[in-house]
Length: 394
Image (cartoon, rainbow, N blue to C red; front, side, top):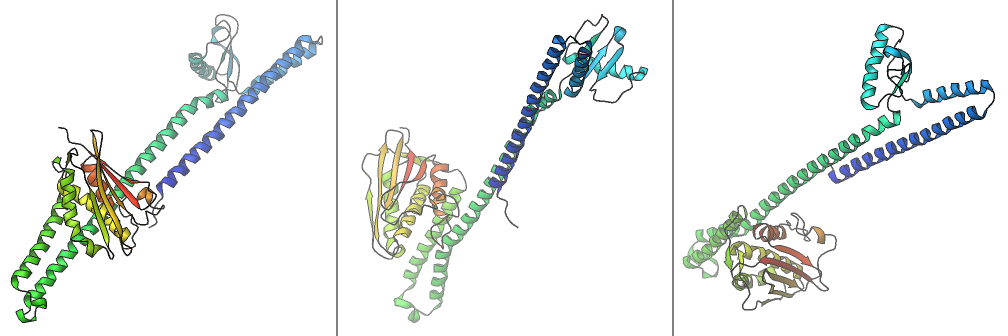
């Protein structure tokens, strides 16, 4: 089933409403122009009747005026003494004013007209006129309601679209998270399966003269890794408790973890440089999650340097008294301009085999859990990520 491009559909609907409104207002404008022309004709007939000395011309002028008024579409009812209907024009219904029923129906209609417009002339005199709105005025009455309806419809559809997109993004994020979990669990589980096969071999057939103690130590490392992965995903699924942390200690823990893995993760030599000055303010955070967020950013840098080598620098500085800034800079080729704006979205990756979860997780940890900010900075060379964390209140 083809996915609906909701932003395009919403934009199309908005343009349709806008086009309809422009056509409608243009029609009203033309009717107003026609009214101006009608008044000009009335004025012309009156002037000709006034200056003419021919009595028949005066009669013709009155007949023409009556025709013009009839063409205007304004409902008019002329009544005499005792509310007797004398004549009428442009009523919204067909009626025979010679019957009592017809007279009663017209009088009922006149009462509705009088609620909006006072009659012209003395109701107690021989003749008085009741009138209603012109077709243009009746059309203009509906404009605010149509505008409000169009606006509410646009807002409603926009709300539904945003809700749909958030749900789709959430489902996409959880799908990517499941893939990432399976990927991270796969390595230690494969290693455990391998050690199990080694244990089944006779001691003389084991590679490298491994004894049970060596195998047990390696199995312990894999189990520790499984426990760390499980703990991380447990914390990311809820609101963990935050405590004052030393940025220097967090980065040192990350450095110790990475130094043992950089030779395996990078094909060529990669230098890791850490510059964390003494005396930085502590930050409110969860150490396990912060290390994970930084690890994902550094792994992104390692992927950029794969096959070419280079340098990764991690340094931190205080920003006033409110924030602490951590920057991770690499000397890689930089980020493709096509994905810069959506680099932190789940499923977006510059690698053909990547899940696009690492940086999305980092944003979830930094911004969702720690109320900080992670961003890709403009850089002349390589790539620089900045993580800002709120300083702990002393």
